[in-house]
Image: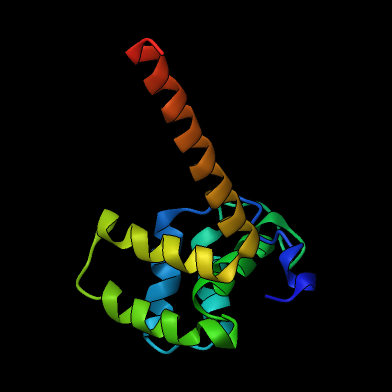
Length: 134
């Protein structure tokens, strides 16, 4: 990954599983990014404030589109496989596929998840020592 893209956070807000499901579904249907943006505008109205691309709603739509629709070329085959796997799965069974796409499209998200995993593993080892009397 080029150094200049590693420093971009991009994923800086709460994203609903329902919104990810909708974005993936519209992408699987073959809708173009502008059409999906219009659908997201209607879906997010009343849930996320603002108008325009610099508003909270605009930034939320950008994150959603980047996860499933406007993915980097290198990630497109993974996205296409993910869309196939989403078919026939519902609810929480879809979460790992969304998680994987977030990891693939947002380096900062991946870095934070990795650091969190290392921290949790370290804390688990410390708790294990305390309970064993070490």
